[in-house]
Image: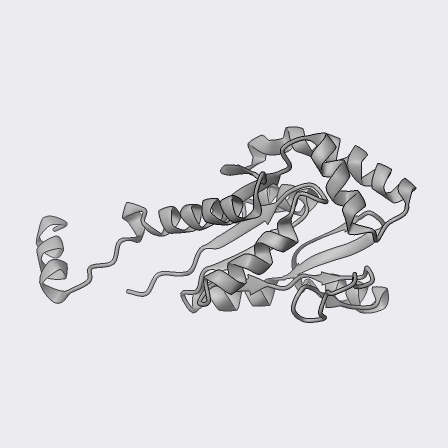
Length: 208
């Protein structure tokens, strides 16, 4: 019997490195799927439509939300973000694992709705590091950076919403930590599938 894929939900404060880690997972685990979120914010330098995000007009986003097309959606830093329900469902029903990158509001909504998934919280080593990473983007004004930091301070204490916490000291170490979580969750007893007919027959005798 083919098992459904697992939804891995990656979340964290703005500037924690979610987008970078998501890109590296796609480059490293070629069979792993990635849910491209829709957003109304403008693309940052180097971002590609349909790869990093699906960039849409507010009117189009509102229509999708009213039609119930989003697994979750939230307004964050004056822009809307949403994850397509169909993208996630189609992949998991085909047996594919999928990474869903959401903000903390989105993770809270999914938890509240008892959405089944593995929740992973990505954190910076310190608030000073978070400040530095936001400034190094070079894409936002001082007041926006300050606003993101204040929101981050309110989000970090919500770490108990999650199943795992990764502190993003070094990108490569964080990537390997995430891969370890993915492999461990796929190795759970309840997901074991016999690799040969003789093993399947043996287990069938034990379980009857």
